[in-house]
Picture (cartoon, rainbow, N blue to C red):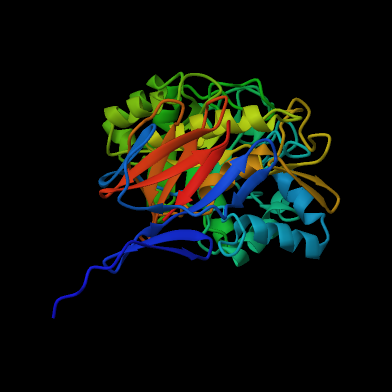
Length: 467
């Protein structure tokens, strides 16, 4: 039987363009637009898009799904103690609604998939504390007084509610400071870890993992120290690379192994201008055997430096764990910089995560410690039960909703004024995130498996294309 050739047929279906030729249907594409002028804030568009046999016009982004890179662990925020306090103080109905919006993966929820929390206080808690605070002059080398009590009013209840919504969410723990009695200066701010307490501090990490597990909270990864080269925050600790290497190989790594703890150990957790720090530790064969990878911030250096660490040790992973936005925020400037350098830049340089600092603050950018950040704008501003969504909310949403954990970055070519990154998800979908850096709208083509999609983005906007 010979099938008669059918004419080209254009079909409109559910707001997406499909094209049938000889019985074959072109692949529809959904576009979620984020325009900093406020006209579309991560909103699904109704303009029909599809891949079809068409002539390429304008700049071209070539997608090659056969060329793959790192798999993704997720996108999210630091859930500081202060963020948890503000959330937990909300009414139950309002809190449930915003937590679902953030962490559920269905409907219009944004599907945040990774959280960083502080082990003890960060500078965005309402006070400094550890899990073994003692009067001056006392020590507790057996950790007999270790307790998660400071986290039980706020952080732990909120984490349990998040896990009820998304049991698969990954959680990273990071200390800002050990207990003061373990430190050379006896203060929450600055100082170094006393060598005689290296073993005790390793056990402190073990106790923390085990205590959180008893609460039903699994810590997927830990970094050794937040910003180990910045002892001026409160709390903070100076930890030089040789000290971190010794702590890992002689104490923390063996302690985790002895306790059967499989939580990943990550190095560094500081700026991209000192890649010598993680590389020097990874060069140590006794330290590196306990280490999964390195974590970075971008308050110094260039994001391309992450690839230097990957290239030096390609078997070890890269993570991006913190970047702040200063209050009151600037949607255009903040979104463009963060999407270009983090959502696109960090992932194109091998990062498996992108985390913004931090999830929530009140209208005065509180709470914070004395000496902590006074101008850190949360992804949310929480004023009682009133929620304001700030730039970091949308920056994360652009990727988190569709680039699910286990997605793999695939090759996408660069185009002038159109930085981009592409992924294949565990469900077999493809996601392309494109930023239009131009001062005006841009029309461009996306080439994929012999077909082409033509799309336009307004000036300074980001598009999340899904097919």
